[in-house]
Amino acid sequence: MADHRLTGESFIIASQSWHSVEINMKSIDTAKNNSGTTEKGMRAGAGTTRRFGARYGARLRKRLEELEKTQYATYRCERCGRVSVRRVAIGIWECGKCGHRFAGGAWAPSPT
Image (cartoon, rainbow, N blue to C red; front, side):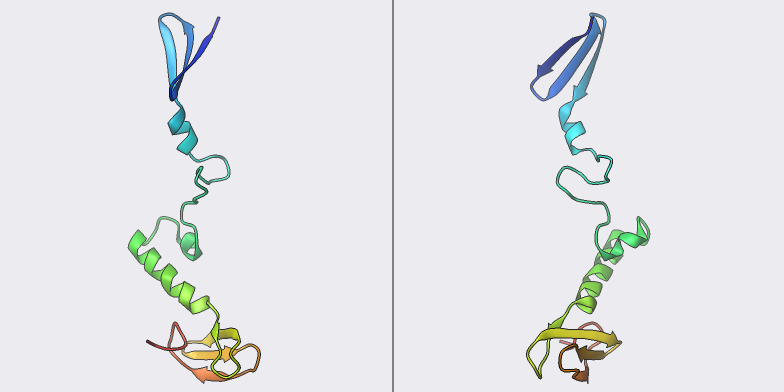
């Protein structure tokens, strides 16, 4: 006959007096579930650098993710004022509304 007791933050399962198993509930709560996320909703390697997995080091992946965020972001057009300027190629930027094409920085429209 099994005895189940909840004491504080641990759950004790005792089937006999000489054999008991203690399960720490905190380790279960913070462990990853089947979807690959933790209880806080964080995912390992989330973002644009998820494709690299555990390769190349965390610092380089973070630096690349920061650069890619600025590269793929939309910016305000100087001619029409709408936020629709996107990068076409390295240093070439174009507004999606008015078609204004201009030279800028490699990662952002203004190199500063």
